[in-house]
Length: 276
Image (cartoon, rainbow, N blue to C red):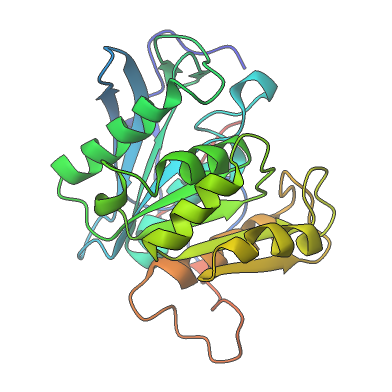
């Protein structure tokens, strides 16, 4: 993707009221208060992002999203996070903060700095959490995907982040950079850790993940049949969003059979369409 130097404006979505209930598809954008934001790191970098808030009602939870590896195409618009921002404010009352880590570009713009192999990115995680705290966003959770899981594991259970987040949800953790020491820190923290592992992940599959995460007694490893590392397909993206909501809402989303409750798949109200 060639980033727009002016930065994508979320106010440019054009909403209309369909004559009938709309099926929620990959490009469906539901109403929310969306704004471009900038995060400032302790070492002086500017990280570009977007905050999507519920249009009405209170904020029930906040997702601080950490994207996949930027050197392999990961950024704040990686599709699961984009769909979370399109849907969860309206469907579940959840705020979604997305941002580009240092040196990462997307349609929103380019964050300053350069990729630092997950080391300098510690300050990016801290800046995002600080922003959420300063904005008064409640019930804050880290959501990491691939490289983003490494950041969540390495920095989420230590200060200044640990005391400001409820826990973390990991999508496709490779456990390349995060070590047993980081897992043990999570174990000591006692904070919830939900781990979604695709059956056909190229890096870490469910059985191996269960063994590695056995170091964290409170971790819950969920193997997802048929899925791959990138969660391609509405079936799998939708499953991820349901699992996230089930974890972060107080008391869960209400399922009784051990599976995540289903988000609505239709919407009766104004919609817009995102253009890839």
